[in-house]
Length: 235
Image (cartoon, rainbow, N blue to C red; front, side, top):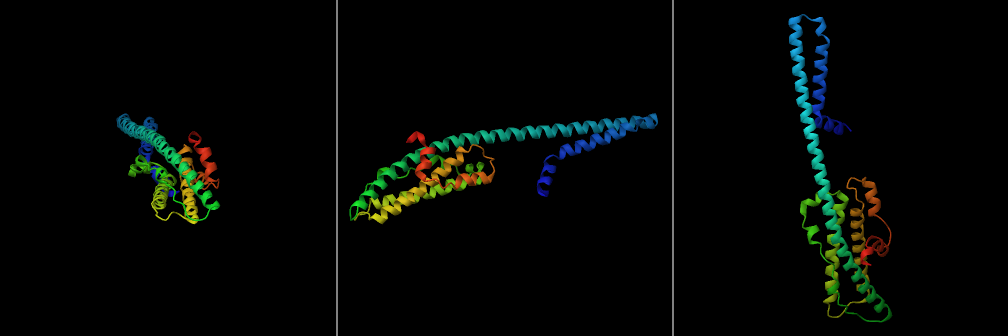
């Protein structure tokens, strides 16, 4: 609380000094009628100088305020543009994850009805990367921390899921039922993380209270249902 008050005071020190100078000038003008003409001239001159200094300080404060407002608008505009581009990449990733989920689920059903191993070709359904999003670097810091955490987690999960699918596709002896189930569970977890990312970007307000972001992030809705609600365009 005290830090916030001190920061507000420092940011608006020009207004505080302006108010003090105006108060001092008014005090001088108030006592002009009780002074001798020579002293009244000096006091009036001093009061005029105080008013001039107060006007300069007020102008400086207004200029900095306009600059801060312009910077905030530019930041919000850049954030909105990045959101639109990252959301487009998320939809692309979601489309690939849905295709992979269908193939892996079909492989699981096949192994449940038959014994032995299966050699599914998953190379066409490998999770797609997000080169634009993950190439932004420190530019991602314009978003809230939950958004950054979700994107970093998504990148890790995509890499792990891609590695698991490549390993099963290249395995000579084929994959057992437990291997497919483990891969399916990992894929569903990646889908949930992707849904969380999309929910965060769909929230729209980068300054939304952190608690409401967590409510969205920790949704227990099944990932297939979440994908049908979040990505209707690709279903």
